[in-house]
Image (tube, rainbow, N blue to C red; front, top):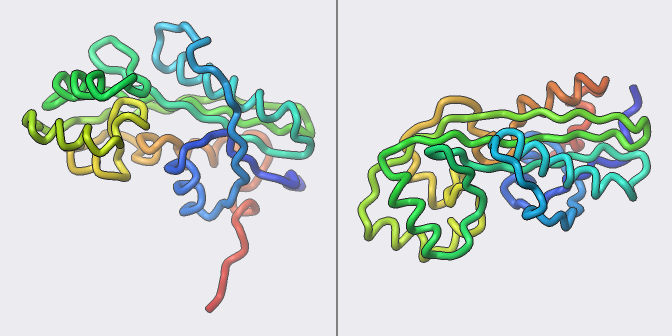
Length: 203
């Protein structure tokens, strides 16, 4: 099958873009502008999946002959859904609860072929175990601002990496996009993953 003319990432996340680039892809970035507060679902996987769909659909509507990737992540912790913290106090309170415990990071993925008007939606889950941080460590981490920009108030590819003691599952999913799952979704829609690799550069 002929690949679409454009590959688009419907996300403002620098980590998702960096992950795709590291995997050989070089998508355009078009931010959806979807209001995340419009989704009211109690199941974390369904919540992340619905937001991924909304973001992909919002961008795909105006993009002919494109393959659009939409993603969204949330942390399931102690029966609650943790998206991005609302402020430093919220991030601090979360880390005081999360330290020494574990949660599950859910990432919803939606892939839309706008030319054929076909799409897929899949979710991935990875267990995350958090280190035992003292209050000073939590305060220092929150002060960096990093926890305020990401679901669950932590990262695996930034300063927060030191505070994740282990994971079970795909590490890319914790960063915000599961590359192995996305490859399978490409295949399911009839596309070959490596045909989307950007040309190799020579020195």
